[in-house]
Image 1 (cartoon, rainbow, N blue to C red):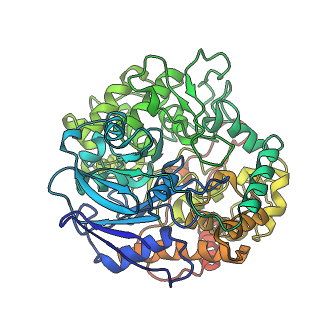
Image 2 (cartoon, rainbow, N blue to C red; image 1 turned 60 degrees about the vertical axis):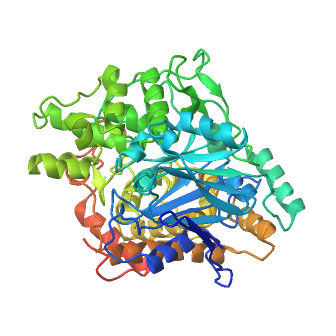
Length: 597
């Protein structure tokens, strides 16, 4: 039952879709609205483009794993459906204000924001907020609407249509991927403000509390949940780097690098602002807020797992303060740290090879804040070029630079190296919305020798048997497709992948019991997998409607093996990858022009 907001006319209407089963008010419904209400081939910045924001039927419920909101639109970076999820309290803010979902079309004449309050949506002028960072804009909107208002805002990067601009909710919780912030900017939409404290309805509160109590009791015994709960939390930096080849170093160009080190969090002299407590009802408190004491805007330092890899080792930087400053700056200016890091790494490698004279240098931590500000504001020729993302920048700079754009479908790769974990590589290449680090569980977790043995029975329930992480064959394709379907089901319902099966305390049985307890109708594993398939099919169908996409990885990952450490020699064999890809398609029932080699 979304609100349909037309920013051009200023009208708001309700669309009732309650008779339709299986969309749960999340991204499945958003994809249907995009397909029904927009023509094929529409530019993502066209006023007719549809932006979908939803807590859905579950998001924002005060329980473990139920804090997510989804942001969905045609991506200005990939040209297909871009889906980004925000953790934290914003989904609860939507539910408290009386909205499960918003579908936004049109373009406001002046910079504006939406106010959701008491089940109504209104449009308000925001011209006085133009150019504001996320923190300043959030402060100003809370001054107008109350200190407890929940705010999803863009920074200057979204206003300037940087193709990987993010939306940042409640200061520190970004919906980062695929340029959703630029779609906000194209619509002259600065923010969405939610006011209200109506609790999300729960059919069986006692069952929900029992599941929450079990989750709290399971934290210490689950190694990943315990890592997320403790300091530094989800960011997971450490005094020693992972084995060579596990994560990208210098644009995936030196997969035998040993030299980079990161200080441990112990004794870090008060850089942590606080643990956030930001996800209502979840005791894990994964995403914590960190920034150096002298950072311009410490409150935006919500540090996700991918930020350090993308803004640190991938740029040849091991200065902890520099990375924390860069992350907080990304959130305040409204930039995706993964695409920013990938684009800067591309520029650095091109400069190192003499293909971008005057370009940035690997390891130059001192210049990083200036570079980030330049990109966010499209400052100068270089900032304007890099604001387009590395794939478009490579096309502008010339064919010699194309091999150094580490992208899939036009979006920069997360920095977990698929040469070591080929199932992750299949997820990057074949997920129909583009590469996401949190779309597929790590292969190493299911390795019989080094994996998380407690998760093996859970994986088997969806047909994913443990296997050596480096194997790349038909079975790898089937296994990866089945795991992707499971995690797609989580995304479809706005269930948090970082709380859920197969590696976290919300096992399949507890997940299904939690959904049943909240909605009051029996929910099974088959229902979860069906939702996952529907979401994947919807994303795939939209991509095919928009002209199809190439499900491939950059050549470097097939041609340049890991050179040192326990993963030495790891590389993505082309024949094995093709066999696994064909099995992946077959498992999901995908055929036709979208399945391009």
